[in-house]
Image (cartoon, rainbow, N blue to C red; front, side, top):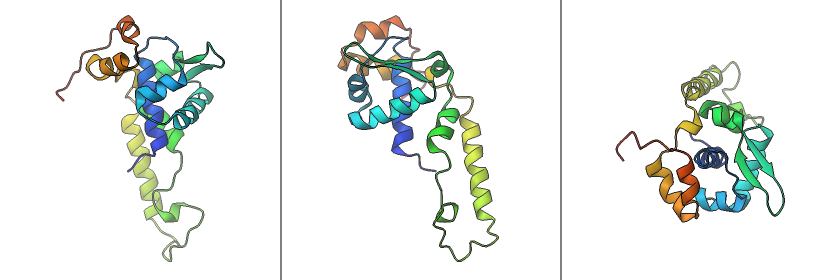
Length: 160
């Protein structure tokens, strides 16, 4: 299964905000931190705000911060919402031109496989993923060094 770029950006935004321990950051800084164009990040932030996972304030002193719900959000939860029912194969879409589409069991099997994929990711809490080795350089590059120290990020638990 291949995730959309939108899902990838949404997960990156949540991971970055998780390391800030409730601090607010601009969407532009988020875009720089996650290495994604600004307009893509603004769409992801709007999506996450609609889900209640981030709080967004407009204006000169505005910014984005992780909400309480966002701190508890799981990878499975976010991917179900961001990926939705994106067709894995043509026969799942509305323009079904497959000559074998009548009584095809593949469609149901793929839908079940997608749900099993999400179930495997349901226990993975996004805010528990970032670690100091991963986020430290990002925070320094953004000039957020002191903010990164306000939250005790776990040390990397695996060799990279």
